[in-house]
Image 1 (cartoon, rainbow, N blue to C red):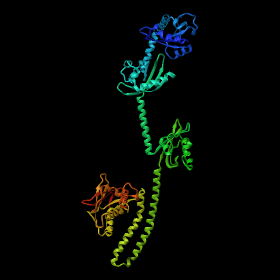
Image 2: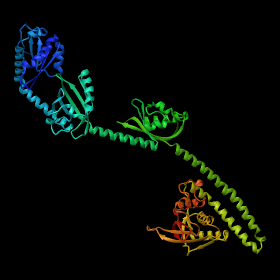
Image 3: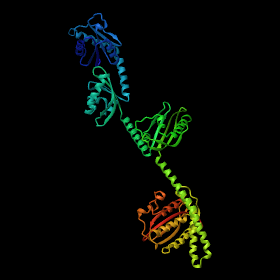
Image 4: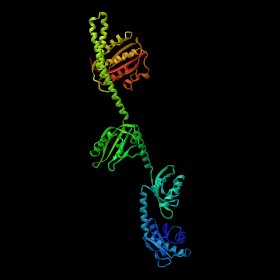
Length: 591
């Protein structure tokens, strides 16, 4: 006989069922066989039990099957299971010894007929179970009767034999075991099946998350199938981290995403898109809802772009205004493109970016450019005309001025003509400030420096303007505003140090190392100097034009102009006192 046998008793009388359930194991079994007896009250329930669980022998009241009255009939077969009938009497009148022998013989005959096939089937089944990438266990009560190698490995045991020595509660913490007793018991009592996530505590103390399915059998037996979720949980954590990173990136860049599924006309927004529109994160818009955020005068254009992308597959990128739910107006840059599968447009996807700040900057820049253009017209028209009148009247005075006044008149004419020249190139300065390209051409460095030295010696007679060595006779690519570079550098030296300042100019041509020479001009003074913390700030770097916090406008213009010429400018300390403005300009040709 097999090591365990399942007997199903069928009788309407509860007392008889309970009596046979308690007595048959001793009447049928021996020391090597465990007899499990289950009971039901009808043939219909018995058939259902045969369909869902293992039964080795049916013991049925004769009245339920229409037996001929034999006290303990010869076994018959139903669906491959032997059926033994008994006459329904009082429980105390049943001949348990005889009934037990008939049941035992029926089971023995079953084993003899099916033994080899069952052994082959069980061996094949065990091999299949061991090959499954999941833990499979059979429990009886609180003990494991069987577990495959995969299950033992998931639980952290070297083999299945080791894990069979303990209770299923040994696989969990006390708190988890208490939880499982409560939730699993309710599920098995209700439907005979329970599924959920469970934490297994391995012998090394590591907790393993598993998904468990438990199916109830008869006689307090259960089949347990469980899968290790460690890798899945890790992927979920990585996915969550990626989502957090994407969400943070969207927040920082203020770029959201959207999708229009053309199969069901549903719209999906990312969280940042919802934040841009001022709606809650659980908001689910329709296409009409999404377009409704645009002002009435722009909705038709948006619809046209969407329809063209839908029907013709044409992407778009454009700026629009939207009005959020709280009434705030924002500028957004939208981008949309088709999603094509099997030659058909099945969805539209794109981005939406908050460009309110950049649009405000652009508008501010446009206003500034307009103001600069107005200033340009004033300087070039009004000031130039007035200076032309002054120069004209001064030229008329020449015959009427004596020899002593000729020198003064000459200075007036020189300064006036130079001012007129400056007005002619102010447009270049404005173009430089606005970022437009400035027209340049080779210009003599020596002539420019010498002319400005002469002007400043006359304008500041108490100061000393000198050169240290000869100024190289080279040309640099610039325009007439190069004179303003030196004028501002010379003027700042006097303005911030006093009229008796000594200004020394030196220059040298250096090898750029790549075949391009450059000239380095050093303008040194003997004043108080400039602290290291202010050496960059004096050029107003990082500030905006006329709002610069540098030392007036002079050195700001120097920096802008030198940069437009392809050069650089910086400040150094002079020895023993004072500061040095260093200009580095590309050499074009030798004059």
